[in-house]
Image (cartoon, rainbow, N blue to C red; front, side, top):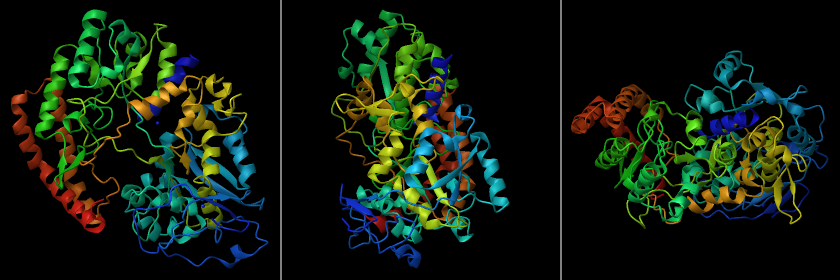
Amino acid sequence: MKKKLALILAMLLIVTLFAACGGGGKTTTTAPPTGQTGDDIGGDEIPDETEKPDSPYNFAVGNYEVDERGFPTGSYEYTLPLSTVEDEVFTYWMTCYTPQFIPEEGFGEMPYQRHTREKTGVNIEYQVINSQAMMENFSVMINSDDLSDLISGFGFYWSGPPKSAIEDAYIVNLIDYRDYMPNYMYQAVRFDDIDVYNTIFYDEETILAFYTMIEEPMPGMNYCARADWLRKLDMDPDDIITYDDVHEMLTRFKNELDVKWPMEIFKTVEPTAAMIFAGYDTAMFVSDQALPTIKIVDGVPTFTLTQQEDYEALVLIKSWLEEGLIDPAWTSVSTNQDITPQILNGETGYVAFNPGEIKGFEDAASDPDAEWAALKKVRKYEGQAFKLGSKLGHFSYGSNSISATCENIPLLVTYCDYFYSPEGSFSSSYGVQGHTWDYNEDGEIRLTDFVLRNPDGLGVAWVMIMNALNSFVDPGIEWHTRNYAYDGGERLLNMMKVTWAEPNYSGEYDWPTSLKFTDEQSEELNKVQADVVTYIGENFLSFVDGSKPLSEWDTYVAEAKAIGLDACQAIFQEAYDAFIAKHGDF
């Protein structure tokens, strides 16, 4: 039962996975900013009390260098503790996805949470809300005007225009406290990436939240095949590159190894956009909640699922379905949890995985020799450079805003910024030495038995989420490589770092993810997009499952445009043109 629980939790994770003197700290230059510029970002005058030599706080103010634009020239290491005031307490509104494993003494008394409190001197009172009740509880908190000091996911639950939360005095504009957060400010310019800059900065005058980041971005999920089966067929995983290669592999799985359904797809067709069909320069990800994936073709925003390349990819996937190479129950598959029996019992051999869940599947498989190998992203031809779908994101899922009613905003800002420092991000990512990790005899970081053979049956990723930084919830930078710090973990880590890496990625079709629509544009989109989403979702999937003949493709595209896709495209074009006018060739 423990092993089964670990598998289920791990699978749920997938879908839903700086140069100054002075006592305040020191600067460590890692990658001087060279990219996106901006005006001096200004802000409130620093309170006098922070400048007193006998201050109980170790703020960063005045202890680091900035460039001509006012940005820190490197990351900043804090002198700890951040505070020596013992009776100052901040409330933190957040969730825990495995609350059944919180000890009786409470979430704040777990080893990592207690260690962080002792190290930083900042007292956090965790208000752990059931994940299913977050929206309702948030509404109660807003309506009663009783906000916690630190609020996880505020922007997700806030229903109005983002800046209205500041204008209505619910949360603070973090730009007013930029001098207290040198590490977060450094992240904005560290990567020479307009999408990173524009995610941190809502606009040149506004920062809404601390967004959780990833220290070393990698592709997090892609298709794997049964390596033990490939060996039986004398096939090399490195040689499976094109759609023809995949077709041969699936066919041989079925005909020579009697595999029932060689390949699995999801009810969205692709698990994530452009995972399988980037070789067709498109994304066959069908959502019932959002418009099709948008791409930029010769300066024109273009929706997938309606183009000639989508038709060609559709013909391919239909042919594989008709040949019995794909599990016909795909319309009921939301996550790998739904196909656990097929994976464990050897009924399928080509599945999209996050590497963090593979070890659990291999250990629980009916065949003791079961082994999964990562395959390269599929291409039409060898050497093809992908145009979309392979850009690595620097952000995870979490975000944290600070309430305007917080009584010591500078300290809470400093506390959040600490987790973006080199030491703070490492410490929070790996947890407490001796509890979740330690050094082996070669000086290498290794996860402990508590993590690898957890007494509650939790998988590695979930143990770390409970006992270290939770990138779905907390502020900071996650070193997600932590989940592979064990003997044999290198194989899984290299799936992301080596096999799935795309060093020659062109990305010319990538939509700028940080582009923001105006309130008026958002209002217009809301008027027309719902009908488009419903129409495309229902009809495109009908082509896939065969209930609608391909002879009706042109009619489908024309009706999608008439229903509102053309109107949506015009709004996207207007927003994109404004973005390019402001940022140029990003």
